[in-house]
Picture 1 (cartoon, one colour):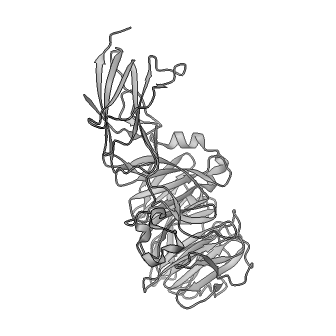
Picture 2: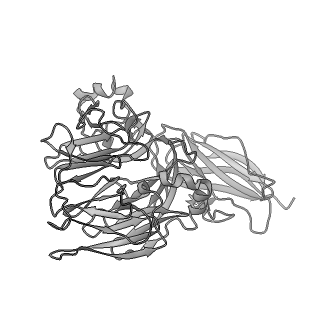
Picture 3: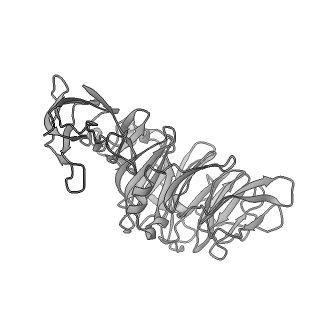
Length: 488
């Protein structure tokens, strides 16, 4: 038998007898194959109107707070009832929108919330009952970040190429020229799109990237130099950061950049770039959203290919193994957040019985303060911690190098479950006029684990489909038997 390792997902260059495939779905990359992607399941009650941002934090006493914003209100999740309680400065007093959503940041014990249409808001954890205007007359902004001891506002409606920061260790001091508060206008690169959160940040513009350096004790406060020219972020929401790493999507490619020197890595080149940016309309690039898994070395880009305001795919990059995968979703936003944790006595707020719980009892969703990946769907916040999604893996196309016809009789799926379906794809010629014909699916033998499939062709592919809800942990490929069938 011939071992066919699970092929790396590289649809840009997948070819005959290569080590790459153009078809994987609802799996996550791992060191020597793929692992399951979990289904989404709701955790909270519905918002009264479409959510336009969510933010979860742990306070110094380890209490979990989950905030949400809509067009007209700011809300706090009740960790017991899982209802959203309005804590707006004034009920119905905000004017956020799809084009001007909420952005949140934590500075000490202060949660700061901004959108381009309203004055910046602040909420002190454990003290305030509602949000209030952030002190010091800060400018309106679409994005808030923390640079070490400073709060920085960007995407300013009146100065789109400017970043402005607060006083040193004072989020409510905004007098320029005093207490180290100041601003920087960038001469080229277009609008500011976002930044990393570090003492020495990277600032992303539409077509350039600047590196900032904090100069303590100096009147300059920060110095800035251009780290990348003619390369920037096309979506403010498509930038994701953790530690020294930042990930973003430019027009035509996905990139990783390090704040230590600004080294740029084209992580999607000859892997997924061509496939994704051919499929996506340029008008939809600005709505691409990215988050980093709060627990693992993965960054998720949510894609709205139809321009309808609903993400229908997630492209996933694991920078630990430097590989990609693809997942189908239906969500209006993806977010990292914390759960408050639950006791068995409090499960009535989630489900009526143990049998209908949305997650297994060992899921991180039940663990207080555990970081998890979440998403909004049907105006409810939920997480990808339920049962396994239906998974599909297709092998690379295989043929004899001299063009001989081959037969297969049996295939052994290399995965730790026999609750699956296997199909063989065949064709005699490899061109657009003869697409791959997939033979009927079959299940492996209960006794041997072999899937008995007879086929005769010059070109073969193998496909595993594992139904949703099945318990498995690692898919590493196929073991197939080929026999010579001659030339005609």
